[in-house]
Image (cartoon, rainbow, N blue to C red; front, side, top):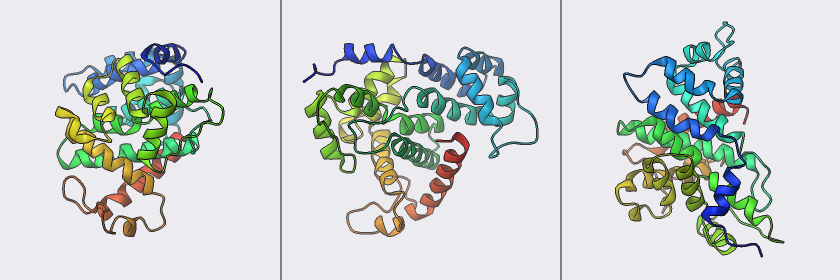
Length: 277
């Protein structure tokens, strides 16, 4: 059996990945600053040529094409707006480094990414209810599963290792048994390594036990519900699934989930088409 997963082994793996994730915290600060200079946003994006290329390509997709050719970052920002640029940047920055086929988890990497996007969309809807930070909510939802890729790389060394994903308690049990870490802990370590603030990674670290998250309990609780909903989003009768006993039927803000689910389904389909997940 390989050595236990540690912060040192994690950082060894992260050093082999693109530097693009480091751009996202800087970009988030700029986008959320009402006095920011648009040129500063453009300059941050330009530091990663691969991200620049993919962002421009995304702008040319049929989903948002406005009949104007987009040939550079400035035009892309003008076409999409800062909030959408941020969302796309988060996805492409991490998708490029975390798209390998799972060897241990009993789910495809594409399915995991689609669930992550759905989780991010639910988190945005929850943030809208209480005037929360939409970018932060989206980032927490999208990146909560990055640790799965890190653990998969590590646990692939163990013959016959398998980790289920449909039962969170069982998933966490197997992750800890095989690596001494859960995917939430691995995600938090990775995001800390890249310079993300605690407001992003602490809700992820504790989303299975929100009451232990301290000052981050609200977003940890929102994430727990969003992850639960994302697992069921593809169910043919999702409204009835969440209407049965012991299943949530209200959002954190008190809205009926069956009014939010169609919005998320539309956003998810648009994201799949737009970002070619």
